[in-house]
Image (cartoon, rainbow, N blue to C red; front, side, top):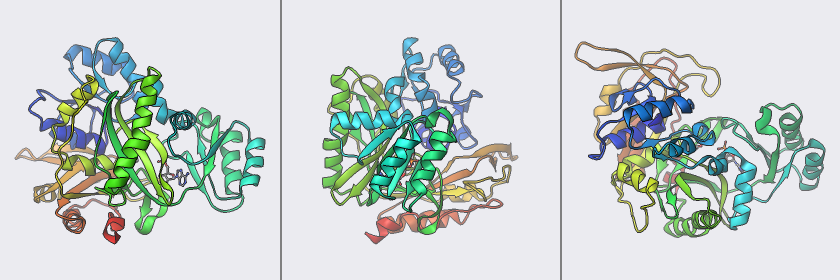
Length: 425
Ligand code: AMP
Ligand code: GLY
């Protein structure tokens, strides 16, 4: 496993349960991951270092968590050396690496998405903004660590965003081009699909909470919590997304000789005129994965091996019908500056609760106590993901927050309303 976040802990946790897994390494991993995998001190985007390690250890399957090594071509390098790696090759990893490329693919495949135009100079972009009015979304083309999307509602905002990206180059080369697109309204949901190049299976739906504070207020974050399933995605919508979004993408790319393998994440806006794609990611979502995987009954190793071996045809997944909620516990200040190195208490007590799993996102193993228990300290902004299952969403939420209350570290903060949209429905 490559990566070090909560998503990677959830994937490692699930892989470690498989009888097909003889030995699991995670590079570089985190404190919690060290409980289920052997940590290897190689950075997630050190492709040559990872390749050397995989060759030496004769790794049968490498699973890539974050986008950066995928966009840099880790899968191409591994496959060229005869090693199996789960994820798309570099060209198709551009579905996340270049928003312009993603839009062009959507257009070619007839996939519903916001109307858009691409600009590489601010004068033309500003002329377009003047025609369209203030309600627009400005997006830098390349990877910007989740900061490249600016939703504009008030006059002047879009112009300012364009100038910052194209003229002041606040995102460097990732902002050589911008997309200006129609502002969509509706409720968002996440759909993650596992693809083998020609065939695919959808994981159950989920929903992220991107803003830092309750009621979707405050700055954008990497995600403050998630739940699954997302009732905004009805059975009919789920099928529509499969038939009218995922299938045309996989089929059209395949007919061009471009076989998408790996996880494909579609960020969907459910609008009054149907589901539209906001963005593609070429990996599992974070923190959605921490809510979705505890509901998956199917052996994850079998699923991932099938995906890398063109063997998903006719395959279907088994699910726990219960609901899950995952709450992110963050360090004070996140998503801005925050402290590290705080001792975490209550992990064991929370983890012992029935139907509760605590995934680590930003922790380090401090030391082990005499009886061998790990003592963990914080090492990131998002520190833990507390996940609980329940017979319905309310029970899952109650159970999750009961577990959250057992955990503490200095400056800890979290949203208290994860799952509120599902409850409302
Ligand atoms: P990111 O995950 O950083 O790419 O941020 C994308 C977020 O920006 C989405 O989750 C939406 O909340 C918002 N967004 C992106 N495109 C649009 C759009 N066309 N209309 C409305 N909101 C959008
Ligand atoms: N949860 C959004 C993402 O993984 O990008």
